[in-house]
Length: 381
Image 1 (tube, rainbow, N blue to C red):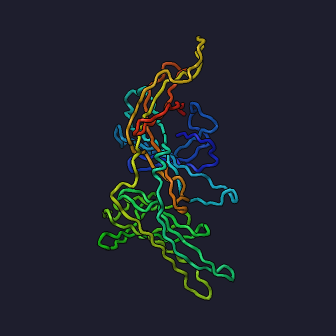
Image 2 (cartoon, rainbow, N blue to C red):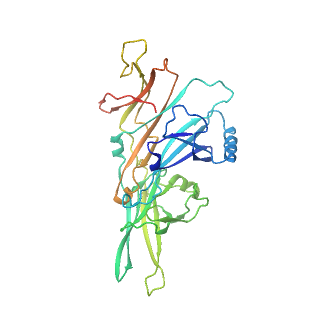
Image 3 (tube, helix red, strand yellow):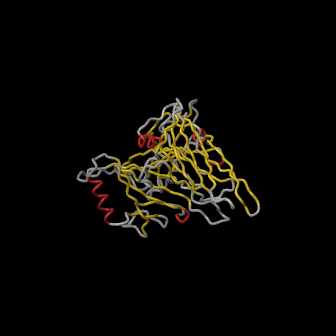
């Protein structure tokens, strides 16, 4: 498994493979398992941590049917620099790149086909995905030497309204930006009749049991799938319901008191039926061009700079994005939450008629008024 990075030293990288309900984590290897065509000093190799994991993976793949999907997923997070260059700490915010693959028949003759994954974004659509965060704030007074200083503690979600199948992002912060103060976060459903129902947090890869509360350190992002929440608690979120998030903090007592200082912050968000994520108001075409990249040895003609032939291999009006993700976890704190939509389209090609030729790709956008532009064709990495 290979990954190309511009500067790997600046990134935390996690590589996983998911087949069915099983997930296998890979580790960085010091050298490739086998020679890699076109490998450079920035080609990174990942392999399973031990032979037992390889055996489990082979057994898992053997149980899958031909055509079943296998997902390779890469998660990246920038490494934090020491202060004063970057005083931030890890905020549990990872960005994801995934590659869906299909099981093939090992006894069938392989076809001379090469899959290509094309990723693109639309800046105009990204701006439409911006939302206001939902926040709730409480104030606590703590001793600072001979003085008593007040601090605001803010609990924030990435939007004020959610659909029943949305993903919710939540974190809490101190006004002085202090990290590592851990509280507990609980959930409750309040229906249209005002009936309150406490909920369990669903199980995740890092949380093996469903619990009423979870620990949440300050400045750490917590991600909640509302679909998983409903499946875990066997209930349905309906339009008009309120999902209540409650942060409880227990702070050290102030002398001469011996009891800890308790603080609660309650943040309600609303469940709505209308989609909270708009669809793109445009069409996109994936263009594949055949380009001559080197000058022919037996010809005085220069290499072509533009494709000699172009095909539109995929076209769609208002297609759904492959994934929509936050740009910065700090946006929950500042109030305007930015997002980006990533479209991942794929193509399959046969070998080019000559090594001097290669396929290049471009994405052409057409607005609802019919306006468009001449795209530039990019080589395949």
